[in-house]
Length: 237
Image (tube, rainbow, N blue to C red; front, side):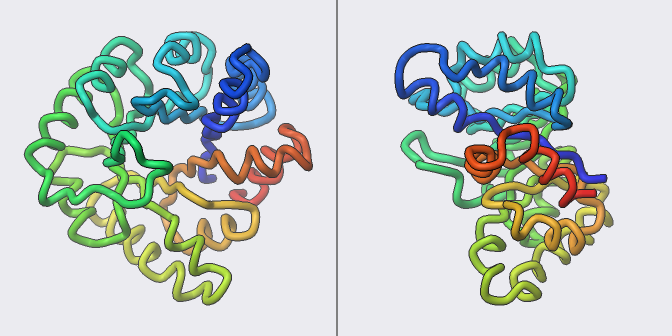
């Protein structure tokens, strides 16, 4: 079964809007696990508009499943990894002012840089995943960089899904098959939701984990957090 990691960035965004501690990010992370989530994902950004660097140690103390931290490997971010040692670090090439992640690494152009980062994080015992587009060269480049996994950027899949499902998933199926051949673990994330998740999962062999935040938290406004997590797990079963 593909694992569900709940991204709680939007919970932190709501908390930050009023400057207090409502909702309680740490309690939400614990509840997500109690309700069945198999991982917690956070993506702290330099402006700390949602997850703050100061949230990470507290989350590290309470997360009992898999703790996945995403981000651009700036010196400050690398220091955060060294101090908190998550189970997985997903490296994402986002600019400081970027609203949301919208493209993957060029693992060929940035090979030397990524190779150094992957080697450093791996030596700390952290599994390293590279956020990439479903392009053969980028997956092959990820191997050369020393990554353990790739996370396929699924924004284009979600956008095309409503118009042509088979076309939307085609490149991802090929990427999933290649990842298996290359010995890369396979994750996926971005704009996956209750409408498109099951189809994606069924067409991507070896999919180990999906990271879902925006859609899941939005659905929880209507269905409640416990019921929503169960609905997503059902799509992955």
